Image (tube, rainbow, N blue to C red):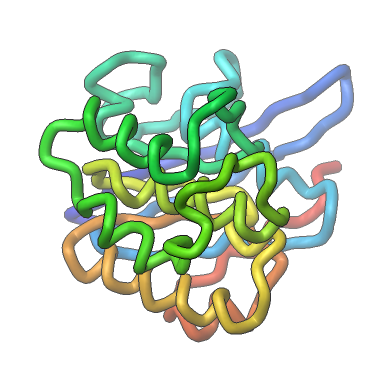
Length: 208
């Protein structure tokens, strides 16, 4: 692809001597949404961590923005990953978490009020994240990610804990992000979400 954001060739990885990824090839263009699917244990989350540079020695080649992914400031200024639930700051409310994120981000994509509205968290703005339901905390994790300026979102099961109504809203949010030139790669079990998002589906198979 002429405008490829991600190019992966022959990516493989063993964890604890067990093959998790074998010979994975992937190319993702700017403005594209890609859904990585497959049964449990095929390495969807592992592939996303490789794309984020969180596994230091995978086999094969991985280029993100023209170079290997690495834990560098310039990399994380363009890439946002949503995976495991973050550690919330004790004593800070939902609104204060968003205000803190916006305060440290130059050229934030959304205001705090826009973020609360977009992710339907306005009625919970004064509460601690730990008092929220699982789905509400997932919405807050996604809200903090989408508030940040970025060019690539790596989302590990973004539908986790979300009800059907908000999954449809998430599809609209991510389509809007892609329309602005952002790129999305997500590991998901939700084929319907991938469909309404207009994602290109990549199916991983069990490594052998």
